[in-house]
Amino acid sequence: MQEEGRRRLLEDNLEKLMRTYTNVFDLGNLDEALKEAFEIKKDRYKYEALGRHKTCLLIFFNNSLRTRLSTQKAARNLGMDVIVLDVNQGAWKLETERGVVMDGDKSEHLLEAIPVMGCYCDMIGVRSFARFENREEDYTEKILNQFVQYSGRPVFSMEAATCHPLQAFADLITIEEYKRAKRPKVVLTWAPHPRALPQAVPNSFADFMNEADVDFVITQPEGYELDPKFVRGARVEYDQRKAFEGADFIYAKNWSCPGVTNPADYGRVLSKDMRWCVDSGHMSWTNNAFFMHCLPVRRGMIVTDDVIEAPTSLVIPEAANREISATLVLKRILEDL
Ligand code: AN0
Ligand code: CP
Image (cartoon, rainbow, N blue to C red):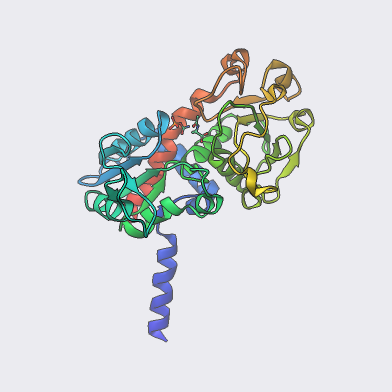
């Protein structure tokens, strides 16, 4: 009986430990997380003793400006050493499939590379976008989960195949800072883009907004429905104008077809309808809404110059809050090492 009690206590505590940061649920209570974020924002060096002699390894399979800089800054705020590796520049070309005869151009297998990376650090951040080759592999987070399973270290997502939780947490912090109503109306709108982009940013934004105290609406053309596990109870409105009416925040983002209604269309660009580009006419339908985008953004496709340059544009404060969201997540991981 005593043994059982001890086991349960251990399991309860293990559940509370931050061993991974891959989606909103790893943050626990969002109000507490927000409170902690604002405390960090007041003094971002408060916990700089925590990371002494600890090393944070950042692995990039894809390009990045904000995530690369803000996560390094966060690790340094906490007193950590940082190592950054761009896998496609200077490392061996990696095989990711098991059971293949490696007689091509790939010199090393991810299944050795991951535990080796784990030897040199105390935590690992991974950026590994959706590849659009196989929906199931992307939506089961095959690559990220291999890092979780084989690195022997806590792993946090710096945008994986389906989620970008450091971005969405920074967006939530920004909404909390700028909201004028207790329960603001927040609209996630699809916008056109020339190339196929992942669904990670809108998925995570939906994930966070569904857990936050906001009136959340998603608007997109037919065929761009996000996966139900992220949409959950959110209102989906196909008429962009109706969605924008009374909005306090407009969050624009392109995403490629999530393949929910037609799996064969997964990762395709189904529309480049420029009527969805957010211009001042669109913004005039709103309640003088703030404009948000995670960046990088293509002007003239997603948003017009005047909207992104307006005083109501929050794109730079959002980027600044990436340092805060990352400092909080890395701090919690350090506390639980
Ligand atoms: C990426 C995306 O849409 O997921 C990263 C955004 C943070 N954007 C591009 O590849 C342009
Ligand atoms: N928003 C964001 O994650 O930007 P980067 O792709 O430049 O890191």
